[in-house]
Length: 85
Image (cartoon, rainbow, N blue to C red; front, side, top):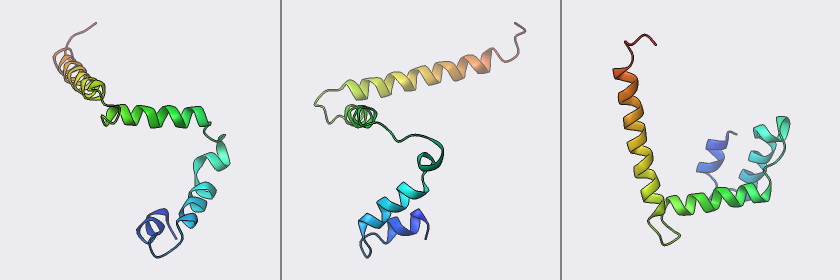
């Protein structure tokens, strides 16, 4: 059973089965060390900021800045494509 199939049918089957499947079949189980708790917490905190769950507009500001930077970078790539450096 694939992860997708397990995720779709998790209401009918054990949620624990999905977790165990991910543990056994993930990249980290064979080739890398597990994610440390501080790293996991940092990811959770960053996602809360991005989604605005921290009560500030910092996440929205950063998303807008990233969009501006991306547009600028793409525009410069297009205009500088024909230049010989």
